[in-house]
Amino acid sequence: MTTSEEIVQETGEEIPTPRSVSVLLHILETDGTYQGMTDEEIQSIVDYEKQLAHMEGSTEQLHNEYANHCASMQELTASSLQAQEAMLQSIIERASNPQLQVIQYG
Image 1 (spheres, one colour):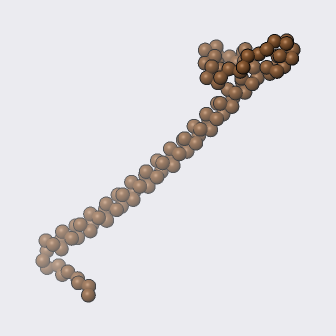
Image 2 (image 1 turned 30 degrees about the vertical axis):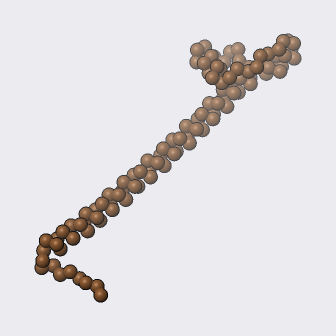
Image 3 (image 1 turned 120 degrees about the horizontal axis):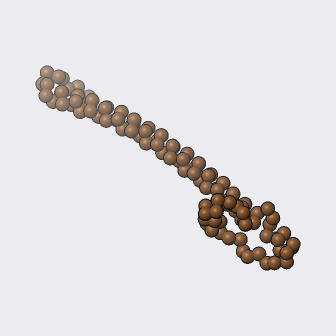
């Protein structure tokens, strides 16, 4: 592959501004080849795909951290609910059984 600067030097013809990544990706998807693209254009696709892979990896990591946090919060909520139910049951038993003595702190 050659750069657009090399083409200008060899042929004397002006090369148009490099195409956007979205246009290049469309061409790549349609034609299935990098043929007709300059080195800079191909590098821009590689850089874009590398950046996209990095973002996907970061997103997956954040998703996993969030899932772990949610699981931890569910465990804490369940534990708290059990403690509250035990406390409520104890209060109900004391209220419904007059033979239980209420301890007074003085």
